[in-house]
Picture 1 (spheres, rainbow, N blue to C red):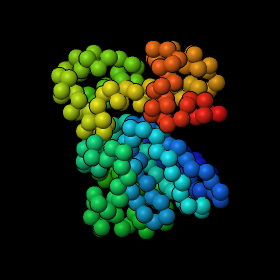
Picture 2: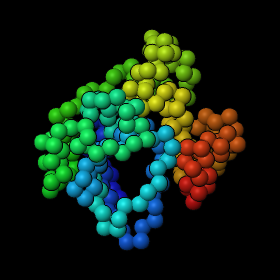
Picture 3: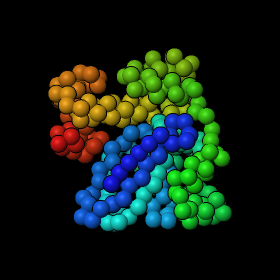
Length: 221
């Protein structure tokens, strides 16, 4: 059972999940986001992924989390996002036990996680918000850099710190999310490739398989 809703913080989605008996392994697609997760009394950070992650929690396991929108989570943790790319890191490796203990023992994990994040909240970097919007719109990296007044090298460095990877990888991941959303809504794959910004349907197929690990049809089937 999975449910999500708007958290009491901007740019953040709260979610909860209980793993039923016999649950199959779950494929989590890269989305540019960072999650702060409580699982059965343990708290960890799931960093921004470059490819899909596949795993299954034990039956009966309870999970509660906050999903920070693209470019917002690293500021709350006070660390560069690229130190968390493709990693799951216990929160106790980042913060003192006095900070993490109350979270692990919380009777209301979502409220505890929101309080933790609120105390450390930093507004997103406006330039990086613009970069994410440009990447989502399929704009060329050079054009995004010019619009933000950044050199290509500076843009690369800022993106890695904020998003966990460079602007080209960010654009591929956001394009994947657009494509999967369109396909799940019932759009023909040929239309998906055009609307999402792929060169053609073969390009769509290659990119989805590279990032998700399975064909688009398997993701939406």
